Length: 123
Image (tube, rainbow, N blue to C red; front, side, top):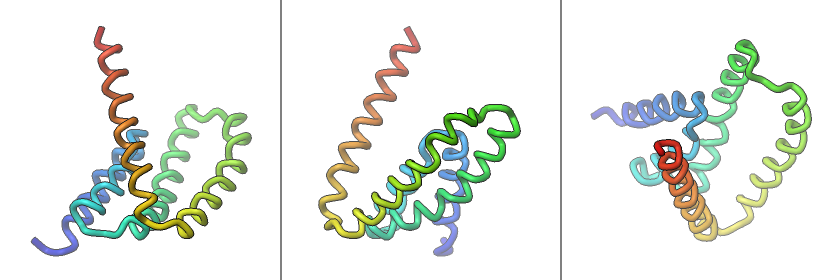
């Protein structure tokens, strides 16, 4: 297989999932770490760059379809940006092995929450 095909397919799949609000960014991190051999910190940086156009396109279409609560957006934009910058700076200062464990716990918690909410919805 050509070396660029797998990364493009992962990016396409996670981009579609991300635009649907499924958490494609988290999936992209996992794909890059497990299947493409990208180091965790580098995968985080790529994921952040990948998120920007995906979020912009999603924001455009949500606004167009009337799904954007402007007041919530106004209240969240500045604190969210500041928290993201602080998190990115902190991530560059922390050892990668310290980032892996909380990320793994987060993935387990997220997966368990989704499974439990799916079971409640099925009842």
